[in-house]
Amino acid sequence: MKKISMAEIARKCGVSKATVSRALADDPRVKPETKAYIKEVARRYNYRPHAVASNLARGRSKTIGMMLPAAPRTIADPFFLEYLNGVSTVLFEHGYSMLLPQVSPNDVQETITSLSAQGRVDGVVLTEPRLDDPRIEFLKNSRIPFVFLGSTNAPDVSWVDGDNIGGAYSAVQELYRLGHRRIAIITGEEGLVSTANRCRGYEHAMADLGLAVDPDLVWHGDFTREGAYRVVRERLMADGGMNATAIFASNDLMAIGAIQALHEAGLRVPEDVSVIGFDGVEVGKYLTPPLTTVQQPIHELGRQVAYTLLGLLEEGKRCRQITLPVRLVNPGNTAGRNMRK
Image (tube, rainbow, N blue to C red; front, side, top):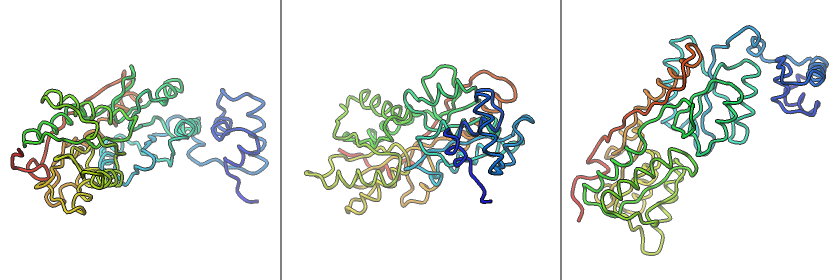
């Protein structure tokens, strides 16, 4: 007989995959009659759950679910590769492994419910909290230990983040010091806390420097190289051309995309346009000249995320909220050395 999947059992029973997971795990939240029916269908079609799931009644799985962003951002983003290295260093030292499930923005909650019900993860780590993030209430109600990479305004939620406001502020100050007054920002994905905080740092710096925030200098990106490339190309091709002498990109990949678009238009960086990024990913060092950027301690962010979740799991600690300092690196490279008038 062909092996049946959990999704097929769910269709036959007229329930969700999460309900099937709970029923096979003897979760008390599933009605007894529904649970019995699902188990009968599973038995009839000789369904065998994953071996790890069969351990749910034996205690902890010693596995952490790592929920990474969906498209357009992916695990190929060098920021997340370095961050995962930091997380894994600590988890492996403490006998834990990581699980990186494929998940889209529309089924995050179902994925987490399924993993937890099957006993496959003891806790989860999430990234890129949103303003009024619906996952927070869901996770609190489900009693799954969790930590965010990125700050939230929700009380009693553990998170670890870099100083997004202060970092953006320092980037704008540096460009002003170099003589720039027409400073553009390429924002991140709309609705993310990190996007809002980096915009806030930009706005605070502009205000303190006596510069008005021109809506024509606020360019909407999505934290990808391709997104920044497109928006800068559009600005370059607009009537009157690009009206900025400097660009603060809200992450390094967008800075790289912006530089590519500028080069293709025959503009030199930093002689014609200065550019500063944010994150400090390794690839920025290999540009010519190296990328000027606000460097986050990415590896340490991962380590602190892991320590925070382990504190919740093993020591019963209360929520922990940490902001790590950032610093401007490679000044004078893609930002430029000469004062603009």
